[in-house]
Each structure stands twice: as C-alpha cells, then as structure tokens.
Image (cartoon, rainbow, N blue to C red; front, top):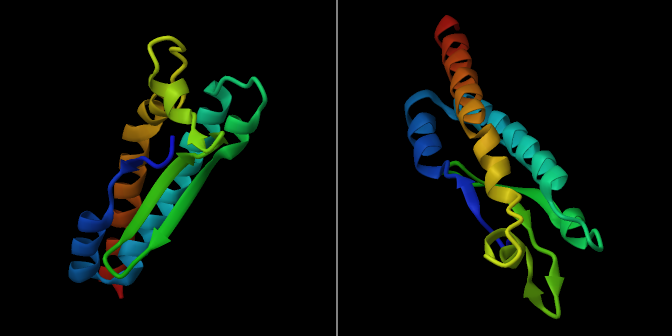
Length: 128
C-alpha cells in the first residue's frame, strides 16, 4: 500500500490543543503512535512473504504539525516501480489482505487508549 491513513487525527487533536494545550495533544499523539506500531506488527505477521520485501517495507510514519499529527502505517515495497502492496491487499486473485485486517484488529483499542491518555493529561492539567 503506498499510503493509507487509518486513523485521522489532525482535526480532533487540533481542537484538543486549542482547548487544553499542547501537552494534552501530545499525549494523544503518543498513544496513537503506539497503536500504529501494533498495527504494523500485526500487518507484518499477516503479510504474505514470497521475497520478504513487502513485509520489510511495512513501517509507521508520524508527521507532527501545529494542528495535530498524521500517523500512517505504510507498506511501500515496489516491483518495477509499482507499489504491489495494493495488489496483495485488494486483488480478488490474490486475496491476501494484511493491512486492513491489522487495522480492524486494533482500531477500537487504539482509539480507547488514546482517549484515556487524553483524559489523564486533562486531569493532570486541571490539578496544576
């Protein structure tokens, strides 16, 4: 897969930063990044490995901005310049999805953990 956002964060985290401050936003970003690592590991376990290049290419990208963060789990291996993760994931002939099942397995847990981290950071901020 060339690039697929599984959990969109910018608008939500931007609102949190405006309301409660950067430390609260950063708590959410950190927890979402941990969750992305879980998705990455599960995707690697599910990924078919003929040569191993696709599996090795699975990684997490975190790009922070003033508004929030863009966190992606990416499989960007190429064959003759073509990102073949998409074919493996979506082709009816191959039928070996690995990224979406990994996301589905962890998504609700990641969201809950991120919200818990944000709640805890807000509580810490109010106690000051």
